Length: 393
Picture 1 (cartoon, rainbow, N blue to C red):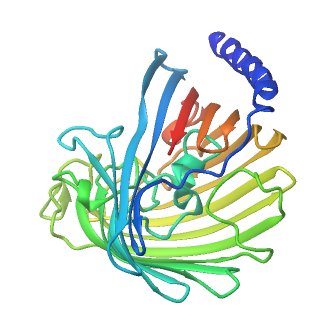
Picture 2: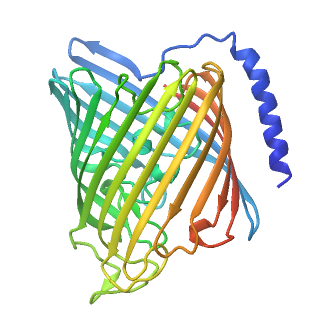
Picture 3: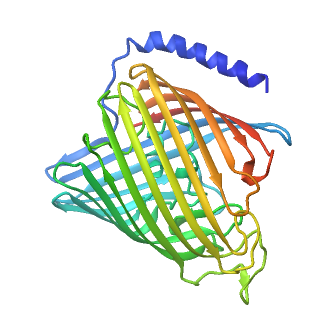
């Protein structure tokens, strides 16, 4: 444990030097890909993100461990041959595992010829969780909190029809989707996964849901950190329902779970309340999620489930302040997760700092996370250190 504070002191010393150095580095507009060809409505754009991460874990009960890996190594290609249409596909080689050598992310065609409306068909983000809809490249913390984690109730990218839009002054934005979505059966979590990267035991089903966001002071995009220093605020609500289509309940025999630690999931409903505020270098985000889930076997008591069901609650508040505008940001967060079968609420408290070399395009992030009562087990604690370098083009 003593090595971590020394490491953090060294990092903050580097930040102090960086504050002086980057004061003389001009800021640029954030990257939105590189257009390699354009002729009227025809264009081709390429881009991507590289996130190299160091992760250190120090559990109270067990040995510490660390690793260096590509958290995300994600290129994309976007283009169009016809007016009002575009296609995009994006893949990730950082999270590939097992038989999935490449993890498919965005893969959709989109029509944007209607006023204030876009219709996408394919694999895209489901309109739930402000934190999930905020790109990984624009997060204040190295890792998302519980409210944006697909392992704990928030839907992942899903294959279907996705509609997004806004009113004329862009103060009211909305989204609606109907899609195919998968769940990895595991009593320890409520893990939504995209069906295009499915394992053979994933439960299959259909998900329908939507969201509405109100921005009284002007549109506040899905991003974190206050670079504009303009006062902005938003409040959002979202909901969904997922139902198992019973096509792939491989872990249930005659209505009984073969292994209570891996039960098939029957249905899930979700509700989100979220808000965000920015002003004068401050950036604050708060979110609460409630998920109700049932297993196919109504007697399962394990992990998050008690007698075949659970109310899974997650909430988080996170914020930051630019101590040097556009250059150095200090961040902190508190998050919690509770479930019917937990003995205690699982909490995490985070502190850290971000060094913006070129806003979110080139940055270095440090976060120290203190976990209490992991997976609902009293006094099962773990501290973690994250250090991540990001390059976006």
